[in-house]
Image (cartoon, rainbow, N blue to C red):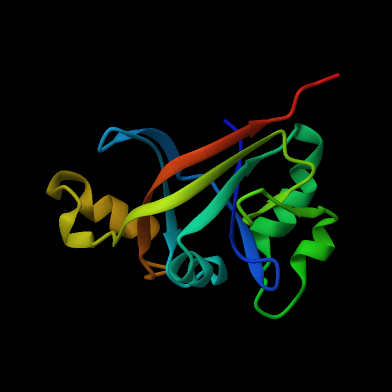
Length: 155
């Protein structure tokens, strides 16, 4: 029920975006996250270049900042600064946010583009019409090992 913020890159150059498609479970006996990102998104470029990334979750009061990060591109503007969030580096050197109530560090295990011909025939037409007609760019699946989790304690 909460938005995730995926962040990839390094301290010199990174980008973040909101993600609503995803979750976690176990794959290959490893705790894993899975997320879906369109290949036209700026953050996708960073996810492709780096092995690690973070998923951050925020208290309700940061919905406005998350809307900025989800609705604007970081290609031509500094949306991180516009959001008002303060980035921090995890001990592993990954970019996360000070305001996050939970930070999950992930290491990529598997990536693959979703291909419309692999969508079940009984729902393919509807899914393609609803999700890939106005924007034909495809989502890519990232399955990643969860390597660390930080949860902010309330005082």
